[in-house]
Every structure is written in structure tokens, then in C-alpha cells.
Image (cartoon, rainbow, N blue to C red; front, side):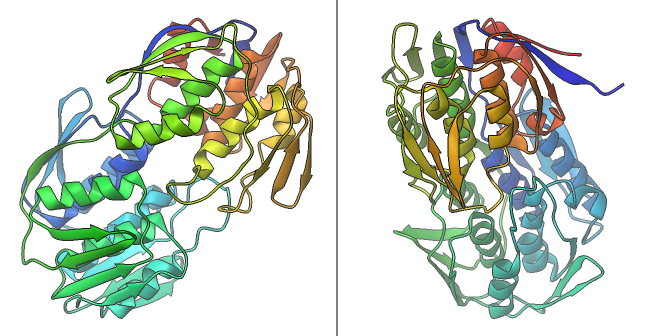
Length: 415
């Protein structure tokens, strides 16, 4: 029998919740461990399905992995294989991040084309073009990317379109390359900055100026101990869940520059009290404000936040307009929100919300990770019961999601 999430909505969230380590920063950090045989210890790594898959991928390549304690992982050893198997790579997009490290350290890589959420075409042609500029010979055969080189040479790489994983892949390739690499129009998302900090702690020579990254290749990287920062999208998820349910919650999160920026964006929905390691949110007697925006690369509003803001915009105290310009298929949650009661008009990639919608529980189907989180927020704020199918997508990106919501008083369980 197919399992589903059973939700009875209409209860304000109350209590305290902790924000876990960043999923989107953890995955490239795991890929970076390929660049050295020494031990790399990563802490504040969330326990997620995507993390588990990536660790299995590293193990299949020959890395030795030990769990030191909860959310702390040590990875060491040389590789016994340069083939990233389909069974792991097809499960998530971030697996493409092993291409650059494999190529620069072992001069050869065979990586299956990546999978993940079906939110749009996320081609790897920008990765391949950049690595070819650095001297790699790359072909695609039977669903695999096959790459080799004698050595990667420093080069000037201009991304015609900002790409986070492309920037991360070329960055990791360049740190062991010969000479200097200049990455122009680089992504500067917090997850890229975290990777730069990790690689620098391993001995890489990297400088960031605006949207240009300068890398001077070195012969060898060494081990390190590194702590990942909090997950900005998880923070946004709980913030907006509190707003949608008219709740009152304290969110425990270390307030670095990335978190402060995210909180500043969320404050448009409704103000919160921001302390050094805590955010106090109280919507028990507050209106939910509509927020009109266009998704954009950092420091713009992240595409991952768009489905979540669709929920609050639907029930906000006025109209709003959202334009999705990152992924062409990232509006698949809208028909499901309409089943809950959302009122909107859609033209192409632009959505106009009336505001003031009233949610009523219903049967819902999850299409991707962030859409799933949005549907849960909608369901816990709705009157009545909902059944949410294909909820496994949510577990890819949220640590203890069901348990955390339950601790805040949400009536949610797996059936």
C-alpha cells in the first residue's frame, strides 16, 4: 500500500526549532574531499537522503568514510575507481560535482548524466565547455560524460549564464590545475562562498572579487576540519510555515551574513525579532504581507524559495506577482495549491495571486523537493485533513522534517 503524509491543519505552530546544516553547501563539500587523500572532517552535515546517496557514491569510488558523531563525517583515502555509477548519479543533480575533482586529481572521469528534481532543463554544457577550455577532452556516450586530460591548465572561463554547480565544478578543477584560472560571471551564492572557504582551509589559493574568482593552482591539498553553516532554505521554510499558520516560534540559527540576508528578504512577509543566535517570529496577531518578486541569482530571491512564497502570497492580505526565471518547470506546485484553495492567474512564467485565499484540506501530490515543502505548509495551515503523496521528495532536503513540525504542534504523520 502506498504511504502518504496525513495532515490535519488549522493549528498554529508554537515552540522552538533548530535549523540544520546547509544541504546545498554540504554536497559540494563532500565532492571536494576527492581532491585530497588526507582526512577531511565535515561537521554540521544534515542527515538527508541526498547526503546518504552522495556518501554511497564516494564509497563506490573508494573513499573511506566514518561517522564520528551525529552530523560529523570524516572522509579519507585515495580512489580505486573514477567511474561515478548511474545508480547514484541519476538520483540527484549534485552528483555532477565529482567531475571537476576527478578530472583534476586523477586526470580521468566517467560520470553518468545527473538526475534529481524535474523542475527544468539543467544542462551541463557550461561545465563541459569550461573544462574543455582548461584542456580536457570530453565526450558523451550512452548517457555518460567521459573526460580525460594530461593536466588541466589555467584558463579564463566566462560563464554566459550564471551557474552555481558550474562555478563549483570549475573552481574545484582549477585548484589542482597548472597556473592561474579566472572565472568570470561566477555564481556568488553562499554555497559557493562556503566551498571557497573549505578549499582555502585545504591549502587552495583562491581570491573572490565581485563576481570574478581567481584561482592559482597548487600541487597538493591537505586535510582539514570544517563546519558547515545553517540552511537558508530550511530557515525560510519554517519562517513561512509560522506565518501561514499564524504561529509563534523561536528559530535557533547562527546569524551569519547569509542568514541575515535571507531574514531581510523574509521580513517583507512579516517582521521578526532577530538576535545573534535566535529568530523570534510571531504571526499570532499579524497580517501576512504579499511579496512580489522575480527569482534571481544571489543576492536575489532564490528559486528554491519561490514555491514557499506562493503559499503565503495565496493567503496574504493583498495581490502579488511572482515571476520564475531560473527554471522553466518550477510552477508544478500551483495546480496542487489550487486544490487547497489558492486563487491565481498564470501567464507563461508569471503568476498573479489575488490574496485572501482560504485553504481547505485535500489530497495532494508532491512533484519535487521544494514543492513538497510548500504543500506541507499549505496543508498544515488549511482547515481539515490532507493526504500528501510522494512525500519522499521532501526527505531529500529537510532533516527530521516531520519530527520538527510535530514538535511545533503540527498534526502530521506518515500513514
